[in-house]
Length: 325
Image 1 (cartoon, helix red, strand yellow):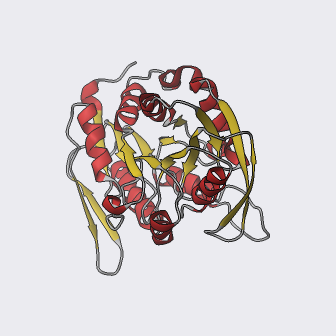
Image 2 (image 1 turned 90 degrees about the vertical axis):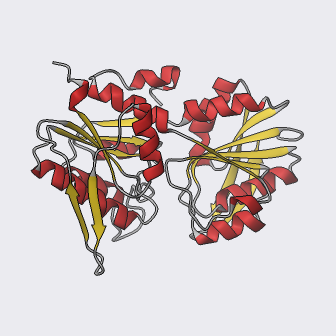
């Protein structure tokens, strides 16, 4: 039996309130009321200020900035909702923090992406909605239904509006080749790949380009950038190989202080386009950047997914032929 629209409720943590408000606006309803406090000793407290018994509840909270605090806040909110007898709780996590710790590649290290999945379920999530996971296998870490959105429709629309004369899609590393290939097919362009070697947590040496980028407007696709290392190294090499311009498009922007410094001094890009899956840092001065900076909103995409989940309709059909990646 399909649920009534009146049963839908939307709450938000404090990690990305601007995005949550845009999602609520798309759904033509206000955010439901919740009081969230952080005590001086660091503990988190919340009180849901509206009745949730028998309701279909969605909680919006990105896993950045400060992923430990953001996730703890989300767990506390969901526990309160569960104890308030919510009918179903969907954790809406636009950016899945800890996604890069998705495998055991060294002795005695955790698989933290799996741990987060376990904690979300233990805290009360009956369903999870997220976007552009760093590794697709993370979907298999969940024992509850997971809906995996892609920012691709939003980014593609913007790229097409730019009307580049000689575009080419470039993957900044081999791990992003599959995603870049999908973009190149939809845009009808050639594909190139940058081979890289990481020399530290935030340092990257790009050392070769597979493909001809000479005279091209490069469309560089990546799922996230935190320190700007991969994008900067790749952009520098692409310019050395004769690229006319380099435009970087990333789904998530969990920027670090080192990233701010690098983007201001060593970026080598002509434009950086990000989504609002993560709130832009207040100390990131976009007015004094040496390149164009654009933020695209994924609020409508997330809002439509919430609406379809609530009505038990297909989410995958949002992406047409992009589904199944």
